[in-house]
Image (tube, rainbow, N blue to C red; front, side, top):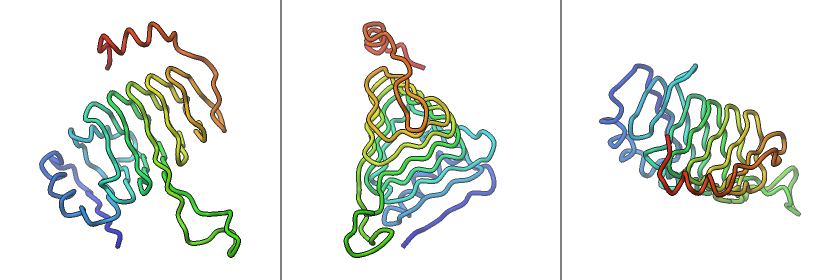
Length: 185
């Protein structure tokens, strides 16, 4: 069964979220609108909402990462977001897909193919990015606005486009030094 919650007024959500998550522990969906939350580091920008769909215990985000408005995360296959990740508004993450290779039904059968999405530390994701099932994004990567990420992204790679391709690379030694020195915002 899916539960959808919508908060229409601003609230001190850092007190409410643990209660809501406890109530939804057996649920399949969480929708928060017009809310800020220091534990989730939700930054309202434009519309005041984001959605997490799927078993909430399969969604993990470090407390130092930020989510902006208009984000949709489908976490049936698992989604893990590392430390100091900055997410632009309108991010969409899918961690499952339909089985289009079915030999019995078209366009697909009822089986879900689950593939976890992992986003490393110190990643910057621009606005309106889509990340597809099974993608692993390495530490210190940059995803350009509007990109569709269908394949893994290496450490320090800067990718953009549809499908996202490497357009630049961060200096590897400098990036490692900055990460090791905790030079993160």
